[in-house]
Length: 454
Image (spheres, one colour):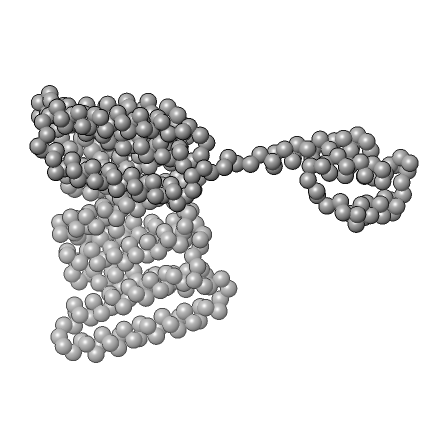
């Protein structure tokens, strides 16, 4: 009987009987048998049976490709790294104790032999697909690059008698960069990072021959920005490594600028950190999570280093301007977080609220009277914003600001021992008022501890 001649109800009964007989996804041997049974039941044609068989066999073959077995247990790999670290640490201690007693030829021979031995050891690691062997080779060659750098320093400074540190840095960095470039030929991330780091060092040494720390820092910042751009554009493999090297190189450059030009250097350092954070937080420039983590982490490191130093430098000299700048920056972050134009909007909005509260406090050195008044108004504004749906966190931050700024106003305008009861009463009233406002707002739709866009 042809497929078209079967009654629909009869076909459904035949199909159900096949399932009751155990047709439920057995392995490769059923790839041919199951379609044949459907043909005999009149549910499909012979051509359809052959198409199903071809598809199932291809699916089974794709699923049967298992990942290569791991030859090194994780514990053994960890112990290997630990033992290697201890051994290198012991060698370093021995070298530090007897290094100065060795003649130049002895030091050069020792560093050279170690470098060559590590290069050979890395090449001897089995070239299998096991990730443990791949990591081991890269770490061994990383140590080889360090030994090569030491050998070059000894050769240039002690053997050739070059006194300028810039020349030593330049020559050693060039040799390490060439060596790492050759080792990176197999697209090894660690060697790529060493190559880029050595390139930054060589650039710094070359510029230092002509100018001072300030221009060296600017050149590194520019090179770091270009490197980050190359990583984001995926022009080199392992873009996260490229971005990390570029961001760290720019950070070192910004710190060097602060050593030569303090005021401009601190502005550059904070601006550089904000630029990295913006790349990580604004949707679009850094599309992948790895890009966001790398740039966001290094941007946070830069801001943690630059913001306190910049505030400590500018506040005694320009407290009012510093406070207003921080307040304006906080307002910008608040806007970006509230409108959901950035990733992790809750974090950005909280940082903005903290910055707006810190701004008036920084202006205290020049604005003794207006500073706490401005701070109180700012905190009250945050409490008011927190009454909007999904803005409860701003109310909590604003309440903390009121508990700081209102007693500050009372202590400045009403000095004396009698202010203690007043401070206590005012603090209690503030807490009660905020609690009542939050209680009345809590019944509104969407009002809970969450920020827009988070």
